Amino acid sequence: VQIVESGGGLGQPGGSLGLSCKVFDSERFFDAATVGWYRQAPGRERELVARITDDGRTIYGDSAKGRFAISRDNDKQTVNLQMDKLKPEDTAMYFCNFRTQTGWMHWGHGTHVTVSS
Image (cartoon, rainbow, N blue to C red):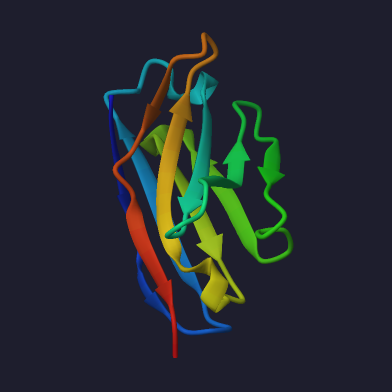
């Protein structure tokens, strides 16, 4: 499969950005996979932002709770992350992670988000 993330860029504090993760060549098994967004800021470890399971359950990292929302469109093999109430500390490289039920996992190359006024 190939993962393509999009939607990063510059956001304003208190504003919103939307990220999209498209998983190409996954039509046969996308709906059975867990897809997540992770982020990594300079000098820090990669951390969970949010993930969504095959049955639509969502899990959020502490930094994302109450501000971000993850959703999936199985027909388009896409997972979206809506980020609201942005903070400067949301600045990071955001990565999409695709994991099948057998445990096979693949990462995207990432999209950068900068939150600054």
